Amino acid sequence: PVSLAEAKRYLRVDFPDDDALITSLISAARMAAETLTGRQLVTARWKLVLNGFRECMILLPKCPVQSVVAIQYLDMAGVIQTMPPADYVVDNASEPARIAPVFGKTWPITLPQIGAVSVTFDAGYGPAASVPEGLKSWIKLRVGSLYAHREEVALLTRGSIAPLPFLDGLLDPYK
Image (cartoon, rainbow, N blue to C red; front, side):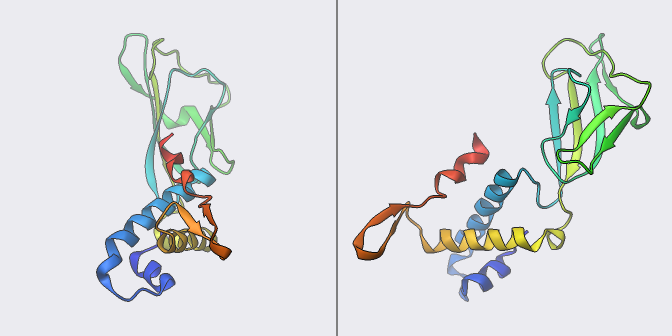
């Protein structure tokens, strides 16, 4: 959601030597923002895999949800089936977005094995220009901090050092 040119303007960098570094810092900051907020910033397609229809509702782990592309499941014969969209309702105004069978219907019976159900959906604000400015500002602030402090500790006044508080948070998307 933040381009290299935007980040360089924010950092007041006017030379190309650090372009690769700044690009990687933008990516790290975006991932941190998405992890901390549970949001997908720029539109992406996701697949949620479940062991079956265990609950009355399916909660989608990313928001904002734009659309549900497909709900597929393994029937009792082990054949992949696609649910007709008319058989379920999507509440993407809620966070997290919810999916439930339409009134009068129930979820189909699935083969009792792991990964029997998959929900493919699109989430995100749209293109980079549609991402809220507050999120973009946070990313630029994080990029600025990462760019200025390239070590895992910061030198404080009077010669003391302190660990950077956000450093380990960069690993959160990989947990």
